[in-house]
Length: 353
Image 1 (cartoon, rainbow, N blue to C red):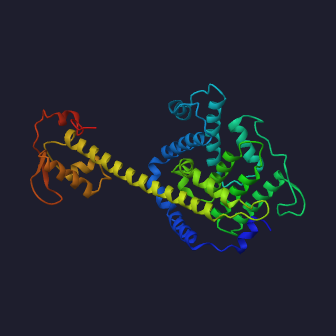
Image 2 (tube, rainbow, N blue to C red):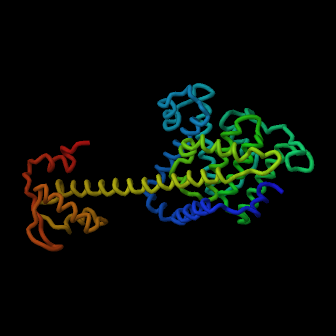
Image 3 (cartoon, rainbow, N blue to C red):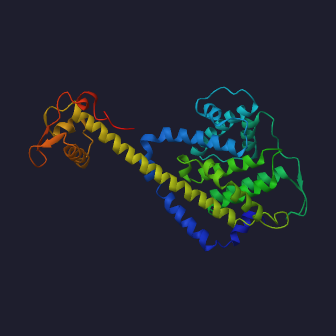
């Protein structure tokens, strides 16, 4: 019986069950979140690609590249000058590949992960481990680490596709197995984290399209490493204790959704402020001395009544315009002079940054 089969007899602790229910409530709002971000989607996803790359470099403890140089390599595609800078470029390529593969829900095997490692660290820089697991580790006969790892990945995909257990739990088991098995000659830690990230994406934890998984993992790295170590004490002769690591992964997801909701709120207020400035600009520069709300609407057909009213009342309070009647068809009059700088230069004249 392996760690996946153990799940058939696993009783989920009540606190994890509550975390899971909370997470799935948020997952159910994915389309709503996506609709809020449509206008900025391309920009946000590109920013997340860059952030994931930046924090992956931090996880690798590459401290010979300054943050300014790192940003040039990531955002401006500067040419690398040495092997460590080539690693940065390789990481960015791999994150783009993972994102594109996840959109097609592509499964993966040990060779796919190895290809990613060699994209990052250079061709043939990493190979499969040649180690063999002994009889003492829950198996009837010796088996190579590579074959054991491939079976773990096969079980992961089987259990996920057949909905045999909750996919975030399956991701954590695969992540912990990978850390313990060390299936590659080198770079197993970053391979495990990249694998966990990809499993989140294909499990449709869509928040990580808009929030940096690697940034949040970097924040929780020490706690996660301690939880994995604690849960793996008896790995060779017994089974993984996954609960503490699962709790931390759910906390990471919760943090991501908090960031996403803040992002949506900030974008909403920025858009609202921008629209207000544009309408003010129209009143200053394009409206005649006497005008109505309908005159404004000809320039801004998608502006709501409440938005137009808010701007009219604001300018009234600032003694820039005054109403000449009441109701929807009321006329308004500009009471600033034609040579006022705001007439010439627009609504933002004189405003502090």
